[in-house]
Length: 124
Picture (cartoon, rainbow, N blue to C red):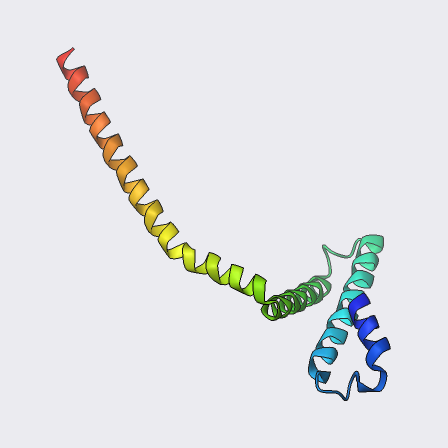
């Protein structure tokens, strides 16, 4: 909210007519939806309508989804965060492979120890 207010104060008439008007409009819509969500949640708490009114719950979910989209858009614009996220995503495949190898080794050792214990029990 503060970010959009600062941009509006700086850009004034270029806020909706300048080169980044789509982003500004998207951010404004998201902020209006956040304020709407806050108002809806206050009304729901006050009147305990959450259990009986599924339409209100759907509206709140859609608003939260829009906020997630905005967060992802902001993450794409930050280069360092984007490279960190790419690194984490790229390291998932080797992590899964190493986890599978470790699981297989634990399984083989468990089977071996079970066989040894069964042979020891049979001899005793």
